[in-house]
Amino acid sequence: MHIISISSISEVQMDFTCDFYFRQGWRDTRLSFEKSPGIDALYVGAEVSDRIWVPDTFFANEKSAQFHSATTPNTFIRITSKGEILRSIRLTVTTSCPMNLQYFPMDRQLCTIEIESYGYSMADIMYKWGIDGKGSVGMSDQVELPQFKVKGLKQLQKIEYLST
Image (tube, rainbow, N blue to C red; front, side):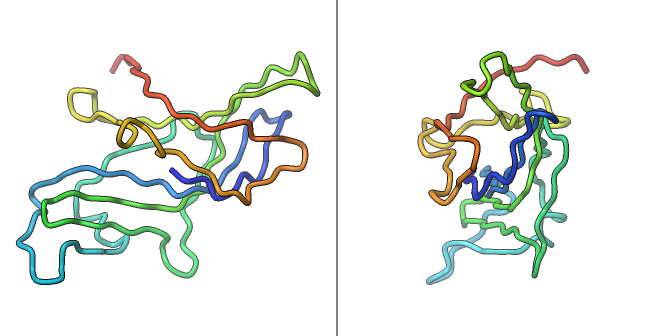
């Protein structure tokens, strides 16, 4: 995940909105192919995501979200000869961010983007942050907020047990 911008943080609505590139990788050996000279991977557009299996990822604390599609859908899929898939999409997401304003204006808030599978259990799908999680979440140096300072980014893996 690479955050391009944080467009708003609202103490009233207790949410924040950010624009980011969301990348997911997985392996599907059904899509493996024999290499040709100079062709190690195939790059395809959004139309292919309707024809292959993709994780049913959603943002559990999402209030609203939008895909970007000007001038073309902002997504791509890379498939390697071994069936390793990388999907990248550009999203703008508003998520809830419960805030404790007891020490306002000297308070610190922790706003999260919670990623889960909508329909699969942990027996079917497991989300992991890159290699040891290092570099899995980044942010553009251009992100500036007039009334706030971003103190850091971190990712963590958490297991949730939900009744179905």
